[in-house]
Length: 225
Picture 1 (cartoon, rainbow, N blue to C red):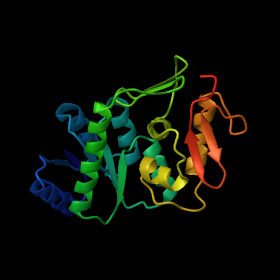
Picture 2 (cartoon, one colour):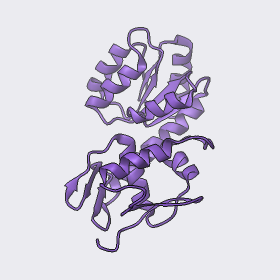
Picture 3 (cartoon, one colour):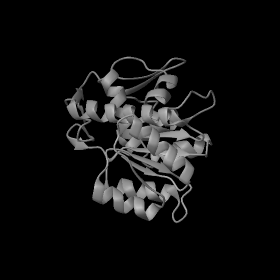
């Protein structure tokens, strides 16, 4: 596993804690080194600090994500909800806000590795004319590929996996975004709107994605599928 952190004290403490938990750890302190190490070493997980001396961590995240699907856990002092959503949209698999303990990071690592194993072992899922393959991260509707962002795909896959259950926004935020629920948060609604648009439907005229007022949303095959 690769730890990218410019603070020597944090870097060494985290490496020590992860090593004690049985992980092989390599540590580096700059964004440029992170890109090189990720390509050459191909770690199972990257723990990425945002406040790096040479590159902004958000740029490192984008560059890593453009060349690799390695799970990335962002470690940040930035606890603004909008910023966290942007990081997850940009390709982060999880985040933890500083200060943190090595045990917290290790738990997040276990979670992202477990999700990857489950996705790789899963079979393609089909609901009506919608086909979702989590292992390949592809989605098709009536034989046509859907061009989805990372979070749009994660949201769709979770809805398909739980179809035709009605899922609350609280659950979707917890399971897809891994965020605590905030009453005024519109994150789920915005992504559902984008997803509907790409699937050729609207909230007023749904085919697959149905809003249950005051309860949540469900994905269900249309009668004509």
